[in-house]
Length: 112
Image 1 (cartoon, rainbow, N blue to C red):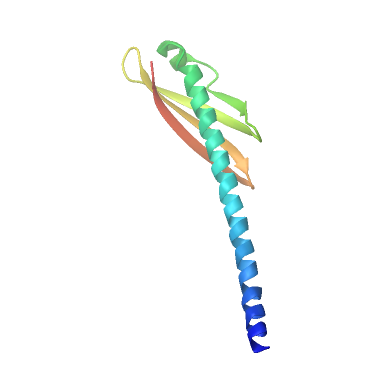
Image 2: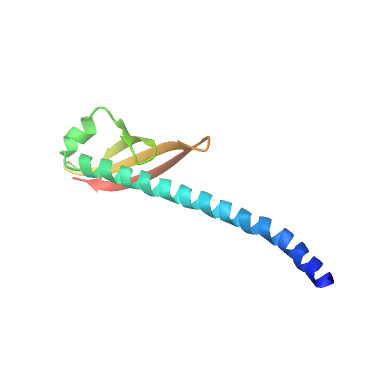
């Protein structure tokens, strides 16, 4: 009988801990998925801008756009820093709101 009581006491402590681990794991999975979607969105902006000549990117307007992702809308903005007459550094920042906080990811690339 004592063994059963000890086993029940241990289970009553272990089950809430396992449930907490599951919740934390799911939150991390969702955050990682959002980061992946935002990075893919930033890369899509870089890919579309890199098709343009450097002078058009540098003088381009607007320097921001919204991107509809699979679950939410992302805001993308970019800067272009010339590094010669025909190329430069393109930095794209994508932001989104999740769980009451604003998150951002930045991707940079050389643009012709």
